Amino acid sequence: MSFPWFVVQTRAGQERAVSRAIEQIETVDVFFPTIRRTIHTGRRVEAVIRPLFPLYLFAAFDVRANSWGQILRTVGVHTILGINRRPGFPVTFLGEKPIANGRYSETPPIPVPDYVITALQSAAELGGGHIPIMEKFDEPLRRLAPDERVRVIEGPFDGFSGLVDRDQKTRVWVLLDILGKERRTLVPREALAPELSAAQ
Image (cartoon, rainbow, N blue to C red):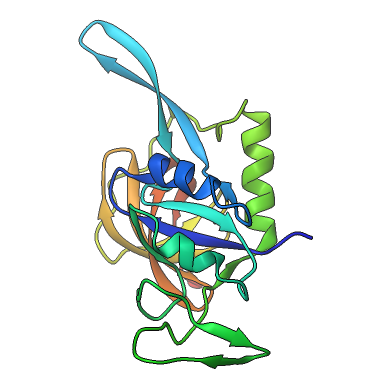
């Protein structure tokens, strides 16, 4: 039986360690999408492996079991997106009515649409284990201003729109409306286009 996928948020720089730790939980599957980038340090050129989504990875598990409590207690885990706070222990579910007290989360995690994971896994398989990305562009996207509306034109968030939070050199922090909530997401620059108004 396959379980839905959820987004696990990690502490900065701990994505790989968290991925390995969660893999040890029997009832949980982990998917940690990565990219291979070429960096230039002086005269040296080397390939480095980086997270596709810094601070995030995906885990599939039965939300009614206590496996997500084990995930929350894993060193380096900040939270699982969707729970209303990080208590360290999950709520217990009986049917659809949760039993909650002061120590427990009152809402379960929010699952990721299957097509997002399928697209990422397919891309990773085609890319030899890493999500292929473009390294160079003929017409790089101009620098984006905070609060500028943009649209994602490729990748797992293709079709989503949002507001620019902060523009970095190769990636842009965007506030995307995902699953009914605004999520601060780091998106590759080449995957963004300015959102055109109806008048345009």
